[in-house]
Image (cartoon, rainbow, N blue to C red; front, side):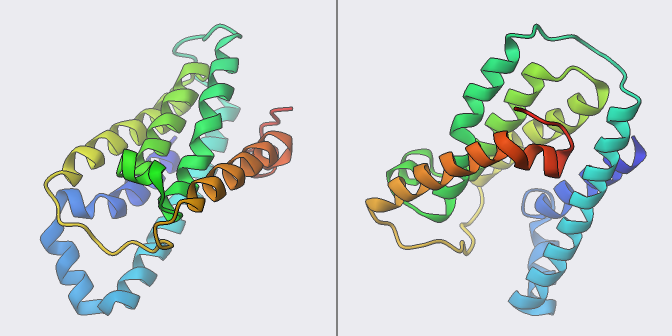
Length: 189
């Protein structure tokens, strides 16, 4: 569990600088330059993500059960996850989805976390998905007070929604068929 917690602190910590310490982020950005900041941010985020994967894997081997969801809740999770992958792509292929939701990536994170909390009741799962859910809600609220930052995305276009939905559904299918087993170690099919 310590590696999971360390990973969450590192990964969500670097992503929370705009929320918790915007002045520190601005100083780092100014001191390192845009590319230097991106490299530092990426390295810290990847290290945090690696710790999350390792820590969650360890927590799964010695689970502490907090609640046992009914089996049918798994189907609710599968259904909610149908929306997650297109929302991730919509963040980078702006169209009506992005215009409507404003921040489709945060909506995807909230949906992903909530969906997994519905079908996973171990301490490790609640810590992982609950922390991401709380962070995504806090980040979304804080965005109303922050200045927009540079986003790498395509130009807004009507066909971008089609791209986001088709690419998202393809990734959803790949995740169910083999990616979830390959990356997470838990088969879904």
